[in-house]
Length: 172
Image 1 (cartoon, rainbow, N blue to C red):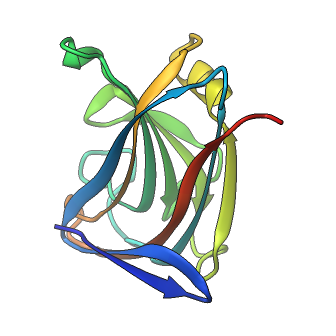
Image 2 (cartoon, one colour):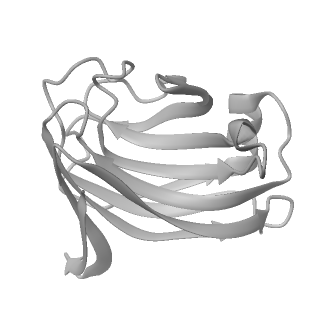
Image 3 (cartoon, rainbow, N blue to C red):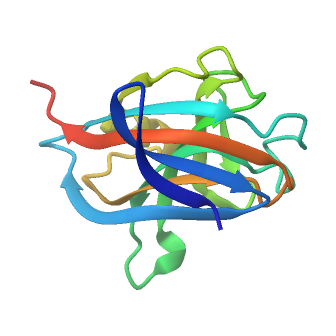
């Protein structure tokens, strides 16, 4: 399993994730009405990327130092569950997006890439409603969970990242 440890770095509280040929995530089930709070905001920081691994778009290379998941539950029809995954990639360029190699119901989107922004806290602010519409081709009224994951189980490499607060905000 990936090791998640609360701590402080550069005066900021966060959750440190270390992965060595491992994968596990942390999630919070939370129903969020996107009409009221469509913006997803968080801070993250990458310390070590799973570099020189297989192609990140393949099953063998589906490992990332940092991921933030947004989940829309399919309920009892679990196969209808959809996920948007924001990643800090090792090699794929910022703006790249593709279907996850394990399921087309998960859409990958690269927000950061490589070591350019590494070793410092970076803030993200995403219009989640718009990103979900672009990823799935329809307006989705709500999300049902948010998760984080640092993983290197497919490539057998190592990664390290920090996650700050993840929050939903209105446009105002």
